[in-house]
Length: 66
Image 1 (cartoon, rainbow, N blue to C red):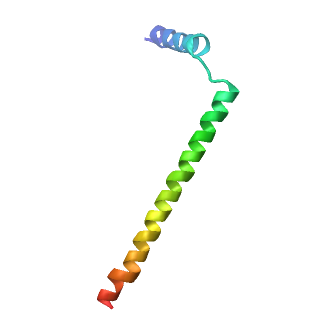
Image 2: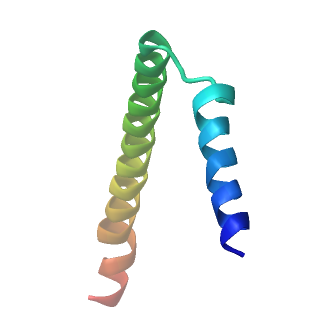
């Protein structure tokens, strides 16, 4: 059992060090900028939807129950 665990750890390390391709700094920066941009756009869309929903609730729904 211990031998299997040791073999697994060695193979995992070998794959991580020798077979995995890591992104360059430029690729990583580009990906980070894309994620940040997408996050900001989605946040703005949610904010607009929330504002519109709040406006509808304040102007159309609440007066009916007041």
